[in-house]
Image 1 (tube, rainbow over the protein chains, first blue to last red):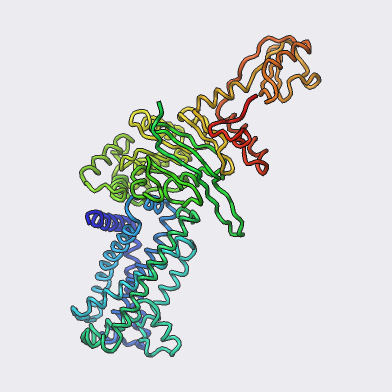
Image 2: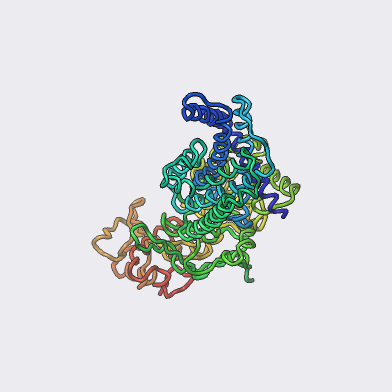
Length: 262
Length: 341
């Protein structure tokens, strides 16, 4: 327990220190992400975005922001640490690599939450968007994030083996922005695309989150209509598959000597 | 007195599959024991298998066969305990975070190495930074340091949990003379004053000769030699001779000393070379006398580690694909260099 707490704090501290050293880039990125939301909302609404229209979009957009952080941390972050040799140093720790990975994910979660609060807060204040805080939204949000991190583990495992998978990570995060229903609900997509969009991480989560937070539906009602059940199954699949893929990636990387190769 | 083994490598092999589907044997049935408290030099050309062996010892590469034990702990089966025995600085990478300062790096790596006491960790970090003359600059990002200082931070990070075994893969690569000397002095100090086992891979053979108590020479994944450095030098000292003859002698014509290099010095002929397996130095002297040469002196030469290394590698190159190396040719003597008649 002690080791777990130390590892989590250690990873958070490291991420914050490194992020602070890139503070100028982060400020620009934050501005860009805020600007991108306003720009897309403007075009999607035919030039007349209203706070009511933008609230569901912002909810999806901020969830996508978590996806960007989680995927980038696991693919780009692991690749960079492979190049600097710090990944090998991490694997020489007597602590289990799963614990270090969990610490890394929790650190990413904390930092992205801070960034989401900052970007979301500024956008809500500036554009008059109102997203109510509902307790029922918490488990749905947690399930959505768990699925996203499962997908990020999958990307991490792939990065350990295929060093060029970074480009795929970028492609997927951009795809998620347009297919997770943030700006265009999945019901309005053509049937074949809706199926694909629903299979992606975060799409189902955003859908249920909107029902619970913005439409004020209870957890029981979203469970009975099957959407929460589908989200739970979806998350379980991504978590298990992602964790399995990461363990596979570790095993293959050790076997092929890839932990220090890039 | 039998020394305690810090590293025990048994039947260690690693075969990588290339992209073309061919198997490349990086390390082949390696058996090696490194005694505790020694500076051990692991030498070999590029691609000899040194780094793969080091990485297998660090648990970063999974062996195809065989085991590595660190102070008795199996790296694969008792990973946690085994990892507490080592600190490593690996070749060609930063090993530490350049965006963080030296102090932050040491605290970070101390925690992931399992040090849970904050007081102990900070005391240890301060001690290391002071010893390495980095204390005054502990709050500067490592990326702003000179190459030598960065390497010192990497070594300090490897030592933060005070491991009994330190693996240093090319620790002086890219360092200037002064920084290299500082690192070398520290390596000696680690072994002699603190009883640590230091395994060193390097291409700087003069450094290995000066620092290492024992050396192992690898080529094509196989062990060519493993001996105390002094013993290895002594063995070759007995094989290399310098023969001094009065006057200028045309060596090409008489053929008495095949393979010896000839030079002229103050009107005398000086021959340097190795006595072959099939004859002794006495045979050579006898031959010289029979040929009517005026022999002034015969003395053992003073080979250095570099000459021995080159000699062994050349022999290994000649035997690759025939019987797999000199150890085997010499009758499978694990610590032997070559057989002598």
